[in-house]
Image (tube, rainbow, N blue to C red; front, side, top):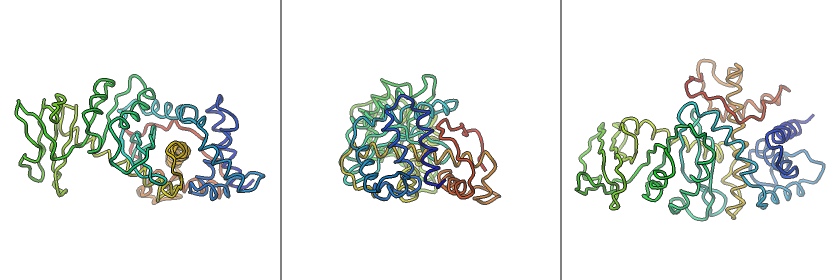
Length: 364
């Protein structure tokens, strides 16, 4: 059996088992998409078609893939939500750290993603695709993606939401405060105004020096005096300038600690683009179609990360990486393990999305 057929049949079996009520034809096409993405490391339909074992011409396969991303019935509620729910439930025995950010996708579009931090990666759980450039989305779009996340979370989970300076709007912070019990840390600008004991000031008026960690407690944020919140001003001695954080956490050092995990979202975008699936080369221009393509790449991505974990937990990492310490990311290791398994005709790891919670473990 060819490697292409092995991967396709394995993915299809896993999808059918996990999605027993999904339309059969749509599930088959999703398996084709994931196979093309994984083996071709591309999201261009013509190139994906060459990796899909089907008794029809590649042009016909490519057209079938296009029809899937055009089809509004290929919805995340059907094909992705079951996996996202299982993933978050598996990780919920420690705080679920959610990070949000946007990146360019297709032609003239942005994808705003919320994902859960897992080791040094971010696993996507919800997203919105919209026309425009980075930083142009209104607060309503930020809230829309968070509304997708809310029903996926286990009710007992502790959640910490992280965002950069694009997500410090009073509208979004108000939504978080009124609709969730989440803790949150978002960055804000040095020009932001706060009200301290009835007196307004801008954060750049504070005389900070490298190494400083200053906390302003029980302050009103912006001219709207949202809050009370805590504003943390931190100047890492290794950085050129301080950062300013708005948080509902009590401890300033804890807010800084969690905020540093926000940068894990950059690994997701680079893995899906230049280091992995080359999502940035998609020629699609319609946000809804790009959102469905992003769903297929997200399922492929999470499985690759799981394969990296499986490689480590089964003691196979030294075959692909340095023995003394791990130098490859879970994503890179997963791709290499897939290649190794296919080359040596070993069993493929299950198509599983209940990844083990490794937050308390040191993966070497």
